[in-house]
Length: 288
Image (cartoon, rainbow, N blue to C red):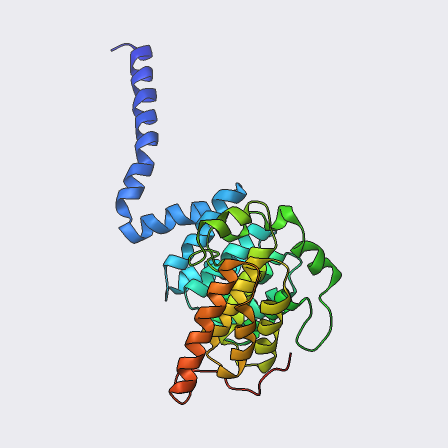
């Protein structure tokens, strides 16, 4: 064999070895290690959409300390899409040790991050999450102070809110029981689905102020989707003292709102008939 032929053979052999090296390394890993290798590639990907998807998928790994740590790291990402996905993933994982970090995100400059963090707090049974949705629905915080101007601006920014209900990981926009009309409405009205979601989210908030806010939304909100959601939330709240407001809703100009109000009246009257034995949030009747 000539010198040139031997040299060529060595080059080919070295190239084949180099190509096969990752395969040998991969084969040495367990399936779990292989999975983390793949997921970590996504978590560190320079492409924001891919990174966001990988972070959101951490929510499928409850009780895993490595996944929780990865989500906590993603909370510091410079892209709001990634931070929002991380906040939601922590809620899906029921990572209660992450509550301090989620509470801190309530002051995030991006509204999608704020809503995701608040929703996860509610998922974990932390009542501080309700405060955000109360503020979204009413335009002010429970203490009476107004929302920050930046937050108001973002809540009314169509580009920010467009598609919010369909964003990966965000599961709190209430189209399930409201039919195709609500879905069509979303395409031309970016804010009412978010307000409707806020109403449904605070349904179980034990603070009487939330009950008052729901009644006010049910009777005064301009968008029918929000009024209907508010009546649904009142029904879920299970407080018979709010039945009077629901009776007023029977005269609403929008059929869908009438239906929601009617169901609320029936449910609350049933609770009243059974001595209020349903799980209800009791407080003095709101005067309107």
